[in-house]
Image (cartoon, rainbow, N blue to C red):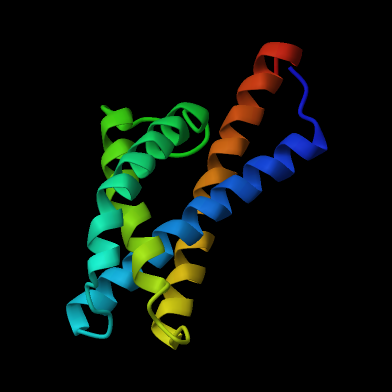
Amino acid sequence: MRFHFYIVILRCSGASGIGVLLGCAIASLFGLLLGRISLTHEWLLASPVLALLGAVFGLVTARLTRLWLVPHIDRRRQLFTIIGAAALPLAIGGLNQTAHAGPLAVGMVLLCAVVLVWLWFRGFQRELALVRQYRWGR
């Protein structure tokens, strides 16, 4: 098994993209709780469709990241499906209503992206060590 540069970059970009999505969802949840974002009827009508898309994306993410993003959790498919179903409507519906992103939202997005890239890097090191062990016996 060889690691190609573009595959590593795509995986890192995917981890940071998942982090940005989760950061947007958390910032929107804070906005809803603090009353800065109102629940309009368009958002309420679109949220079931977005939740279904988020569940599908969460299931696909759980499958694609099984080796390098929190690999030792039991029932990871269920966890990622639930997180996707909750995060996608919040991220898309919540932040679209704000005129400008506040410092809390930007900080939350950056923090989540950094945490998920760090988790990906740890999983990538683990996967690389496993490949080296089987390939060269080190």
